[in-house]
Image (tube, rainbow, N blue to C red; front, side, top):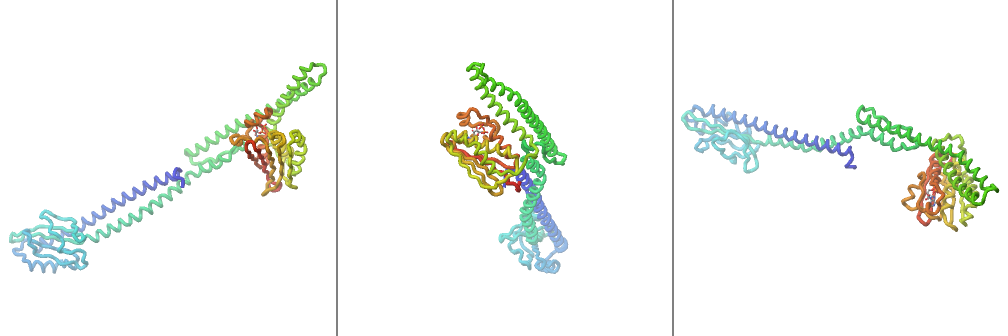
Length: 467
Ligand code: ADP
């Protein structure tokens, strides 16, 4: 469980606060009920002591020990009613003491004589029992002072209080669990629009900037957030469209003047009337113009892919046959460097797509492999069908790519340090085009490499019929 999540923290906070409130209120209730029961019982005992004093002792000239005892027994039956009654003279002499109660809830002999000013309260006996006792003093008709004490066991009060305490102890975890579950669920529901927005935001990239996040109709900060994010995506969409259009327009506009310049320079290089120095200059300018034309063509190709062309040109393409014929056309390049080009083709690996673009992928892969593999190296091209996908794989025994460069090789205009050092003429657009073509065909592209050992690039496309 993620203890840093808002869900966890809010649920934990609610649980702690509400359980604490439950325990505090429960504790107050416990003390109040216990106190109320004790006070009520003590008041009853005090009333009874007063009654005994008023009816059996006050005004009587000689209450008489034996007579008093039998009167109390007859009127109050303390043993049967589980009560304690003691009448004593203030000199300390006990005139009457009730026997053990029927329920044996206390031992009368253990109840100490309270001090003269004691009126009522709870007394804990040495054997662990407790009694609630009330006392009153009275003068007899003969002027002798008596003290009447009436008590009952505190056990019923304790038992009610203990039951309440047990309910509180059992209720606390139930309350905590219910609050935890409730708030966890509530926060989850409250955050659902956020997770929906996050889910949508994760799949929005430069390729589908026209999509928008779901708007939470909550009328609060969430609704504002989703609205603001959608406005931001709209602004990004505008900016991307403008920049794509700029690249498309610029590369398109540059192609014609470049073609004219190239034509003029070719004518100059062939002109018999100009000097050898001028011809040489025209030749090197021609090389630069060709390089520039290549970059402009690549940019134009990328901008057309970005614009997401209609699929009108899509046909069923036999990838094996396409790769083999492309490899054959490029065999000369490999021969120039005495590179052994090994081709392994599985028959009838068909995909659905744009033939020219798919050929471009094989060209770019092979071109890089041959370019970045030293003389006498090896390059392998294979086409296979694996789990509903066509795999077009090119591997070489070339200079390889440093681990820190590998994640960037599909970015536009990115060139690895080794590549820059050995081949100054690249522009870093070849693999970016491959990636755009792969995405446009619903596939993906990947590369692995070990520096100074070689590289392996792979295009994965859905087989025709599965796309
Ligand atoms: P370019 O080849 O024009 O530099 P690419 O987009 O084709 O541009 O490749 C980008 C970078 O990826 C290259 O600069 C190079 O560093 C690296 N790279 C691509 N293919 C290979 C390969 N077969 N062997 C070594 N490095 C490669």
